[in-house]
Structures are given as C-alpha cells and as structure tokens.
Length: 325
Ligand code: TXA
Ligand code: MG
Image (spheres, rainbow, N blue to C red):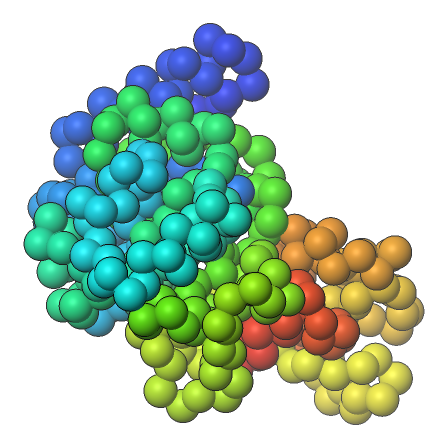
C-alpha cells in the first residue's frame, strides 16, 4: 500500500485533504490525522471491520482499548451511559476542558463495539480541539476510534513525518497538520460517582483538577488501570536511562543526551528540551527530540530529569516508560 501525505497549507489543499480522509473513513479505511496532542490513527468507531485495521497497522494487542473521539458533545450520551450521580461532575469536566486534551472513561453504551473497548464495560471518550481533526470528524458525522499513530510501544508521533516513519505502506493517508501543540497524549481520567481518578497524566495537569474530588493513584501501580499503560512504552530502540549528566557514569561507546535546559559537551549528540526551562515547550518537543536521538546511531540515551510539577509529571511519566528496559 502506498502511503499518501496530504498537505493542508492552503485552503484548497485543506479541503482536498479533508475530503480524501472522509472518503477513506466512509469506505472503512484508516487515516492518520493531527490532533492537538499527538497524531491519531482513525477509523469509524462503530465498525469493527474498520477498527480491526488499526490494530493490524499498529501491531497493537487486542487487550488495549481505543479512545473514541466525538464529532460534538451531543454524541456523549450515545456512546456513554452516564450515571445520574456522575452527571454534574461530567458536565463540569466537559465545560472546563472540552474541546481539548482530556479523555473521560465512563460506562459504555452498546453502540461502541467490544473491539474498541477491549471488552471492558467502560469507554474512553474525547473531543479534540484540532481544527483539521474537527473538520474531518464533523464532515464524517460519526465517532472515530483513534489511538496514537505509532507502532505499539513506540514513541507517539507529533509530526506527519513521524507517522510516515512508523506506518508507511501500512496506511493509505496521513493528513499533515504540522507539529502538534501539546506533544503529549491526552490526560485520561475515570469518573466514578463524583470522584475523578487519574489514569494517565498529560497536558491537563493535577493542579487543574483542584475544584474536583480528584484522586491521583497512578504512581508505580504494577497493574495499571488504563490497560495500555504498561511500564514499558513510548520506547526508543536505543537503550535509555534517566540521570543527571556529570553525576551519571556512562559506560556506552556512543552516548546522547536529552537535556532539560543546558547542553553539556562530551556527548555524541545532544538535544535540549527547553533552554528557558519552560515545561510546555519541553512537552511539545519531547517526542521529536527523543526520536532524533533514537536515529543518531547511539548506544545509550541519557535523559535528564525535569522538575516534577505541573506538566513535568506527564513528561517524567513518559521518560520513565521510555527508559524501562
Ligand atoms: O491524546 C490522545 O489521547 C491520543 C490522540 C490521538 O487522541 N490518543 C491516544 O490513544 O493516546 P492511545 O490508544 O495511544 O492511548 C489510549 C489509552 C491507552 O492506554 C488505553 O489503554 C486507554 O487509553 N484506554 C482506552 N479505553 C480505556 C478504558 N475504557 N478504560 C481505561 N483505559 C482506557
Ligand atoms: Mg499510544
């Protein structure tokens, strides 16, 4: 299969790209689309014959459920069965964070096939704020199942070229929307009663849930609640270790450094996440820089820790999973 990359740099190209994406989705095919977090690999969420192609292209195990993206808020009650006691909490979360990088795990309705939820009685739902994603899904008019558009266990794509390097010849189309804004996958929370429980850290930080009954139990849980949150994830092919340059003994022949603020010499390759120490910039560029180091023919990548506050929590989560051997 030839993988086409559709540019969206002019109004005409954008319209052509959206039409091509919608045509493919209508025919039960899969398409890579930009979102504000990372690129997603989308299929008609109501069609198992389409969704199965996502699992095949990604080599994703069937126990790992997919996020269902909605065309608009009105779709929420068609895919989720929101208990009366959770209603006010769900409405408040949506009001504050949708459209945007927050995914809600809620009891499911039968419209969502088992393949999408991996047989769970819950469904993960999200409403993306990305204009291209919204244009496609609104024109398509139905929910789209879309995981990150990388092969299973690998680094999530934050640019169209990353999708091509992960999935070339496995998918018919990538819509190029430029680099993604947040650079990290959405924050995932489960709503149980009135409680909001963190399942995956992300662009919406713990501090932003202060008005909710918020529970953050994710630290070092051996059995993650989000089935895809395995200890090893987001992994480069190169061995990776977290440590401070100068304090860490490096035995590798060719070592690279993923620095937070300051580049240190005596590494064979260096990427700096944010010279000004801005965690938003660090998050937005993390996966692209990790990918570049992974392609530099190194024996080891040393990743410097970032301050673990705000967005730094999600960045350290991704670094730890990437470093897990
Ligand atoms: O930002 C994002 O969320 C991106 C964009 C494309 O929307 N998507 C994404 O999907 O990161 P994926 O499949 O790479 O990660 C989704 C995570 C997985 O860890 C999966 O196990 C979890 O969501 N998940 C999905 N449904 C779930 C459910 N019903 N209960 C708990 N976890 C669920
Ligand atoms: Mg993923």
